[in-house]
Length: 107
Length: 411
Image (cartoon, rainbow over the protein chains, first blue to last red):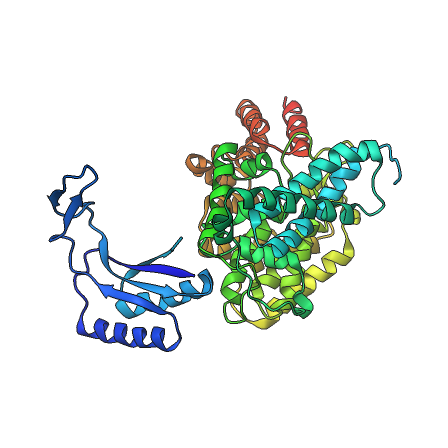
């Protein structure tokens, strides 16, 4: 079972070197214990571009698709047996990156 | 098969005794709460249809489990045809080996820990436990939470969908997670107990011993699991000391009997002795008590008095003061005021109660308490109006009867 673990930035800004160190350590643990699938950090949503090609004629719109104070600042995709395991990892991830986290199952 | 006159009564009894067992066994076997609940409901519907015609089977529990299993397989076949992959994705996970769990080898305990999972909102946990473990109907649960039936239905449907989609496991938590998970379970069990102790619904017994007994049974199981947890002991003591007064609490004519008017000789001495033992055990532990332990201590004071006049009200108020510091909710303040009325008189209590009106005007116990205090200070007209409101809001038949008589006694 895979879960998307989203890091929510609510005005905290980019990670500090100390947070980066803790995240690296957490990532190593995910790999060692077989939970690691993928992870990535994201910049602020300001430079985002929305693309809509449903009509066959691509429309590009400047800015994120949703304007919000809180935004996705990064994510992990983890492999976990069930939600108990995923929540426990997410709790440690939240501590490591010092941010709020959302856990969501893949279909 | 024996033909019995009172088949509906036997079906009700079988429902109370077997519902949780049937749901838990099906959930374990088929790994799906939805199928478990629906198949259990199908089986009881079949009993309603078949038993009056065929007679009640000699072992109703076995009949219900077998029938529910068959209904579940029918449902799964239908769903498999519809969408194989989808159903597979919705299976509950259970990677526990099928080994005996010793003292806690109870399917219902798995069910309750799943229903009380911290990833679910507290209200959802309570609703789900009452439905899946307690076997309460949607209208009963909606009433317990003072919400619309449709909203409650949606809440439970959403909860079951989340359990499946997010893969909330169907098992008793690991030892390290247990303490945190238990407090959520205790809150749920207390609510189940309260629903049994003051049952709602015009056709329901005023006290549903099945629910109080079930809550006590499950709390005992958790106590075996966590013998040193003070709040588990506290909740068990609280339930026992409350349950001990059950038979004295409703009169022969089906009317609620107030604490001061109860025949204390009818209280269950064994339950009281056990409850007092637990309270003493917690006092001896010398650890700051939690909410349930304080409530248990309050009930220990009440059950120690041979007569209402012997009650140590200053002790009761002191315990409520302690409780208010832990839980400053208006309901605690209301109960404190009831004790204050005995210690400092009804005027003082009434002033405290009136301050809670904004938050509790729609709560029957608030109106009933206020009515009683207004009666005691001689404000009959206002008292009558408050009784009217209380009667309108009360869902318990014995309480309605009691309130009606009290109102009609007003000059």
